[in-house]
Amino acid sequence: MAQAKKSKTTTVKSKSTKTARKTVKAAAPAATVAQHRSGTKQALLIEMLSRETGATIADLVAASGWLPHTIRGAMAGALKKKLGLTITSEKVDGRGRVYRVQPS
Image (cartoon, rainbow, N blue to C red; front, side):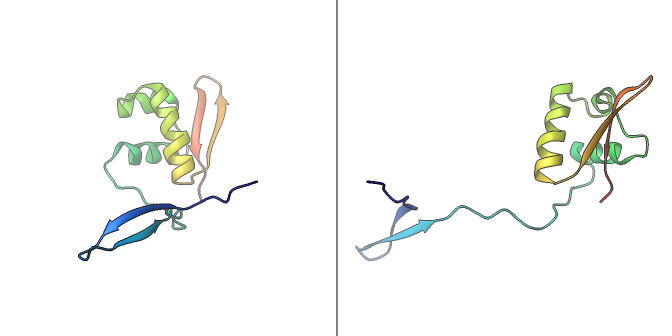
Protein backbone atom coordinates (compact mmCIF):
# COMPACT_ATOMS: atom_id res chain seq x y z
CA MET A 1 0.00 0.00 0.00
CA ALA A 2 1.59 3.28 -1.12
CA GLN A 3 1.61 6.18 1.26
CA ALA A 4 1.12 9.77 0.12
CA LYS A 5 3.88 12.26 0.82
CA LYS A 6 3.15 14.57 3.70
CA SER A 7 4.18 18.22 3.91
CA LYS A 8 6.56 19.18 6.66
CA THR A 9 4.67 20.63 9.56
CA THR A 10 5.84 22.52 12.56
CA THR A 11 4.00 23.10 15.78
CA VAL A 12 3.59 26.73 16.74
CA LYS A 13 2.38 27.65 20.20
CA SER A 14 0.10 30.63 20.34
CA LYS A 15 -0.87 32.72 23.34
CA SER A 16 -3.65 30.33 24.17
CA THR A 17 -3.01 26.75 25.23
CA LYS A 18 -4.03 25.42 21.81
CA THR A 19 -1.38 24.62 19.23
CA ALA A 20 -1.61 25.52 15.57
CA ARG A 21 -0.02 23.63 12.68
CA LYS A 22 1.75 25.52 9.99
CA THR A 23 2.70 23.96 6.62
CA VAL A 24 6.19 24.81 5.46
CA LYS A 25 6.65 24.97 1.70
CA ALA A 26 9.91 25.19 -0.20
CA ALA A 27 10.55 28.56 -1.79
CA ALA A 28 10.05 28.70 -5.53
CA PRO A 29 13.08 29.70 -7.61
CA ALA A 30 13.13 33.35 -8.57
CA ALA A 31 12.18 34.04 -12.18
CA THR A 32 14.01 37.34 -12.27
CA VAL A 33 17.51 37.80 -13.61
CA ALA A 34 19.99 38.07 -10.77
CA GLN A 35 22.25 41.10 -10.78
CA HIS A 36 25.79 41.10 -9.45
CA ARG A 37 27.33 43.67 -7.13
CA SER A 38 30.26 45.66 -8.40
CA GLY A 39 33.63 45.30 -6.70
CA THR A 40 33.25 41.60 -5.84
CA LYS A 41 35.36 38.74 -7.11
CA GLN A 42 32.32 37.32 -8.88
CA ALA A 43 31.86 40.66 -10.67
CA LEU A 44 35.55 40.55 -11.59
CA LEU A 45 35.08 37.09 -13.14
CA ILE A 46 32.06 38.25 -15.13
CA GLU A 47 33.88 41.37 -16.33
CA MET A 48 36.95 39.41 -17.45
CA LEU A 49 34.89 36.70 -19.15
CA SER A 50 32.77 39.34 -20.92
CA ARG A 51 35.78 40.84 -22.69
CA GLU A 52 36.11 40.22 -26.40
CA THR A 53 39.36 38.30 -25.80
CA GLY A 54 37.87 36.23 -22.96
CA ALA A 55 40.05 34.90 -20.15
CA THR A 56 42.02 31.78 -19.32
CA ILE A 57 41.96 30.03 -15.96
CA ALA A 58 45.47 31.40 -15.35
CA ASP A 59 44.25 34.96 -16.03
CA LEU A 60 41.34 34.53 -13.62
CA VAL A 61 43.58 32.98 -10.93
CA ALA A 62 46.05 35.88 -11.17
CA ALA A 63 43.29 38.50 -10.94
CA SER A 64 41.19 36.95 -8.17
CA GLY A 65 43.74 35.11 -6.04
CA TRP A 66 41.56 31.98 -6.10
CA LEU A 67 42.83 28.51 -6.93
CA PRO A 68 41.99 26.99 -10.35
CA HIS A 69 39.42 24.55 -8.96
CA THR A 70 37.62 27.44 -7.25
CA ILE A 71 37.47 29.38 -10.53
CA ARG A 72 36.01 26.38 -12.36
CA GLY A 73 33.51 25.80 -9.55
CA ALA A 74 32.43 29.45 -9.56
CA MET A 75 31.92 29.36 -13.33
CA ALA A 76 29.85 26.15 -13.14
CA GLY A 77 27.87 26.96 -10.00
CA ALA A 78 27.48 30.68 -9.52
CA LEU A 79 27.71 31.94 -13.09
CA LYS A 80 26.06 29.15 -15.06
CA LYS A 81 23.56 27.63 -12.64
CA LYS A 82 22.61 30.52 -10.38
CA LEU A 83 22.97 33.51 -12.72
CA GLY A 84 22.06 31.60 -15.88
CA LEU A 85 25.00 32.91 -17.93
CA THR A 86 26.19 30.98 -20.98
CA ILE A 87 29.92 30.35 -20.80
CA THR A 88 31.76 29.04 -23.85
CA SER A 89 35.30 27.77 -24.12
CA GLU A 90 37.65 27.24 -27.02
CA LYS A 91 41.28 26.31 -27.49
CA VAL A 92 43.37 29.17 -28.80
CA ASP A 93 46.88 28.58 -30.11
CA GLY A 94 49.46 30.05 -27.76
CA ARG A 95 46.93 30.78 -24.97
CA GLY A 96 45.31 27.47 -24.19
CA ARG A 97 41.62 27.22 -23.28
CA VAL A 98 39.85 30.59 -23.32
CA TYR A 99 36.49 31.10 -21.61
CA ARG A 100 33.90 33.73 -22.57
CA VAL A 101 30.44 34.79 -21.44
CA GLN A 102 27.99 34.91 -24.34
CA PRO A 103 26.21 38.26 -24.60
CA SER A 104 22.52 37.94 -23.77
